[in-house]
Image (cartoon, rainbow, N blue to C red; front, side, top):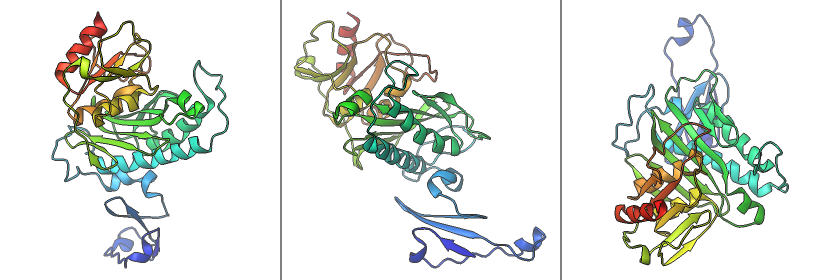
Length: 329
């Protein structure tokens, strides 16, 4: 038996499979035990060859709900462990950050308007691990893809590989990778990572929202004249806010409402945002106690790469109503 992996030297491992070799008709059977340290414990993978725990089988070896999330996620074929999903998302986001940090070519891709070549490079490092984990994927850069041999019916990850790519090209530290697992139409686990700073927003349905491990709770401003509002696009009029900001990355803008940095967010354009732009941040904000709605009253959870929406977010119901009223006027 072979023992490998980063944690191998820390543990004595004994594996016993009574009569397994005889049952499969073999006199000898070799096993590889791969030991990897993870965020909150240890994962063992036993198989015929070495394998990367993060990308090959984390969902299959850790299939149950987290004990920290007493919430029935639904009737999907496989139960979801939010911690394992976030572990995968973190690995993907770390790789995305490496790609952007090393990038020196900020030229356009030539495939569609507004798309940089680096958008596709980051998409490449996001899609592979998600498909390898058996999820369907909806990406801004590559559309809808199905994992080969996927058993995860009703489970799709919506990803914006590089939200705020123009900011990244200008050296402005406000750009992100956003990932959101949708289970049977319900946003369930999300991570939005600022690739410039490493700040990481996470959320699990029923389990709260966090920034770098610190639990988030929105502020409760209810008056526009006391609010600082993030906007996307050009406002048609002054909403009466105390101040406003146009930051250029909607996922981070909405997450900043969850952290209390902003009191609200308004998309001033008409149907300019795909679901990848806001869905991960939507779950973060809702789990922090805030609200997000479409300016036209439509469902924001739309798993269609051609659909566009006009999201409006706020830290309170009262403020959201006021922002929607102004947005519709």
